[in-house]
Length: 333
Image 1: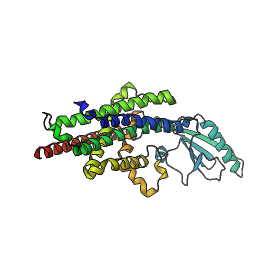
Image 2: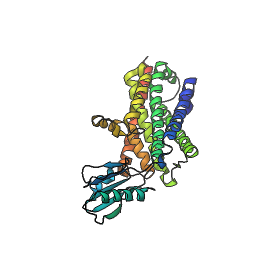
Image 3: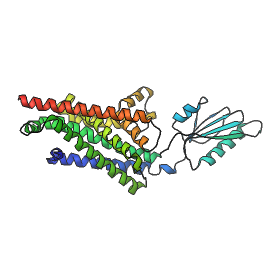
Image 4: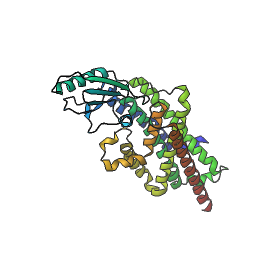
């Protein structure tokens, strides 16, 4: 029954695009960020003196607390007050010691009295860190799920309804539950194929080993299922609301979600009043879940399970209800 989604050329083409489009994104963005590991670390600092440092240092207006430092998107944070420098290291940085020594010399030279400057280093346990390249590659996988679910929802519940495919199902013994399971399982399988292909190409093209450890395979598969299901639900909503215009609207929705989810582009570039939109985008949560799978402390396991179950239930409920609705409608005509 899974083959019913690929019975014509259009379906085969869409299936191919769901696999090929993320590969194009992978090559494009991977090439841009492929040298991300060679970049200097980003360091934020607070100083009670006017120190002259490089452009990869970000000045803070207030002394941050340890909890605030953990939530900041910097590799390290330096607090220099009263001849003491506290260095909070959040991730392994190859150039860290040189960067810290440069800051110490800059702080010492800014003092009118040449006193000894004490430096204390604090290793913060904030989980595994990922490079800019790995962050982007996980974003490619996230967007592949968006493409798969969104296109499937629009295709099945807009194009297929318009072309009368649900009327054909009425002459078969298939029931709404079975048909819904076929729709969902076909997209989940496509999502798994797409993600495995992207993981393999990430290793071959960019040397990024993002293959999931065996003990975390269950979490990765759960994230895949949740991602496909919530995006399938999004596609169904677009199909139900916009009907014939759904294919064009879905492309607009796809583009908007890429920019507002923070998957490819940092949310910090958006105006503050627009950043709240990121909390309404499914790719944002899928991206956080994938990072959690790789050991990045983006969210708790409790929250991981909550989002996964919620996404799966929303997708399953909307798929089932919509399938039953269209089958009943064709029975009445």
